[in-house]
Image (cartoon, rainbow, N blue to C red):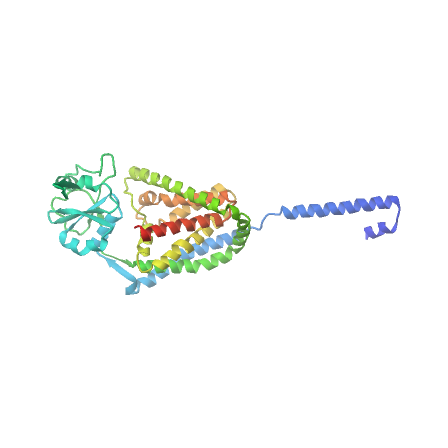
Amino acid sequence: MIHMLLRYNINGENMEKENEILEFEDLLKEVHQQKKSTEPKPNRSVSYFTALFIYVLMMFVFGSVIFTIFMGIDSMKVTYSEEDLLIRAVSQDSSGMGILDNNHVELLLPSYEGDIIRVGDYAGYTIFVSSTNTHYEALLMLEVDGIKTINETNVLSILQDETLTSWTENGPMIHLYAGNDQVLPDFFLADYERVDGPLTTLSDFSTAFANFLIYLAMLPPILFLLKKDLSDDFSAFKKRKKEWFIIIAVGYLYLILGNILSNFMSNFLSDLLGVPISESLNQLTIIAALQSEGTVLMMISAILFGPIVEELIFRKAIFGIFSKNTTGLIVSSVIFGTIHLVSEPSVASALVNGSAYFIMGVVFGLIYIKNDKNIYAPMIVHILSNLIAVLGILFIL
């Protein structure tokens, strides 16, 4: 109405006032646009907390239900004897050594070909070590006239006198294993790790199937809750298509450096805590499932479902809850490492064998931060890393 009245009085003074009002209107419009452009993004904390809740619910509650159901089906489970568990324990420890009477050896060892090395016989017992042991020949073998035989003197020094306790001078300690109910020879007087059996658990195929079902159930609701983040990040990532190769290459380089650091940390913690280095139970479970009839199911879970879910939860959701990147990085890395090590027998074992998971959590978090919190950067690197690892298990191990 004011604007119309001023236009009605056409004189110099009113025209100046009209120009002033027009300029004021433009100023208001400009201020409004600036305010709109600087408005904070909507808080999505509710979606992040809900996604975390669903992850925990599916992983532990739904997972327990699946385990209980499968354990009630005879065809879905398997029973390992104490001798089986003994062989598996030694095979998983590169510094491990065990003995079995020759009767059990002929029945069991062929099933574990490639996992253990049969060193030789001594007094009716077979000495065996992990196939990953690179020191056993120098300590346990003798070559006479071109024929390799067992070094009986050193065997007694290990099992009876305990005058030999490490594979090499200043090298890894020898870890002896024996069954809790195993009848041991009189000369076996050294301390050893006791293995209890029998044990009934899910078969490797059942484990692969259960893992697949858990991820299949949790993936849709998590994708739905975080679909806005996925959409926004995808739009931003598309604009950097010329940089994709560099982003992925640098991210994978971070992982390689992280693996070097984790190996150093594992060795340091192993010496400090006196715990042998072995594959984590999580890794052993994946390897066994990949080598079972559930190969395809485990491949889908490990290469696709797992990285997508884990990056959305441990990076997008957890970082989204905290205002500081440092806090998000620490919390996400600790939880990421812990969630992969809940089955370890002790905290010390988890620290020694699982340092790689904690460091990987840090690496994926850094990739996320360095790429403006775009979830596709760590997700693609995570998928690539798992793909290479799975192919290595299937075609190298």
